[in-house]
Length: 370
Ligand SMILES: *Cc1c(COP(=O)(O)O)cnc(C)c1O
Image (tube, rainbow, N blue to C red):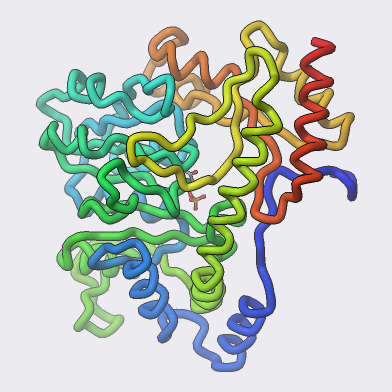
């Protein structure tokens, strides 16, 4: 990346994060200290969920959340093939099978009717993904009557049609804090929860299976090291203080893109908020016009100083999933069509109107040549 290229993503960090990290360093308490509980309580309150458990990544959170709802060997978990690969991988961690179903062409989230049709005797959970921050139709999925784990890793700030925040419906919902997410701790994640028993299980399993009232010598179940350090919690607390500003800035940048790109023939933009659903803006991903060469478009944008990337590839067509589960092209036509045409443009809270205009101008020029 050259210095004057417009980057895809960039975290917004400041003096509060620096001060928080230095205080932790000086305290000598680098893990399992006071900030862990504080970060969990403030995050849960922010979402409107009764409980939250902090973990070392979104992937770790999804893994523990699936275990908490009882997914195990030989089960099937119904999920979206249009996601970051982590949401399917965690199913395989528990020796269960991901059963993919196609997505809605407008929202790009799992189609509830397709999910209902895929339920079988071995189905033990549904794992909807709030992809690109759009709230998946969890209300409809609840009618199926199977435990739900929500992948909310891209959806901080999103809201369901009935006004409930994503993560506050009572199902385990997992947020991620990698550097490109709405809130970052470098690496990290958070599971919001409706039940204390789930929190106890996740808190134990993130810490090698230790029971809360036992000292470190005794472990009454299998566990992992999925702990989040105090350094990460300090960054997370400072990020929570600026979350409203960061989310508002993302919404502003998205609106600017919406205007700047509206005139490009054949280009499909992210669906606008509707029917009470509010997107928590994570990326700005467009679908290129049919027949357009995406690799050529990416090269053309790079020549004009604009980073972009295909986002996301279909999970079922990745080599591991083809070989392990025998997936083939054609199984999920909506997902495959979107995955072939989708392109993420630079998107972060400090992207200026000038940057948005430059990206729009570059994309217009590249597509006109194609
Ligand atoms: C980022 C992300 C994850 C995983 O989060 P990590 O913190 O990187 O482990 C899972 N699912 C989706 C949809 C994501 O975007």
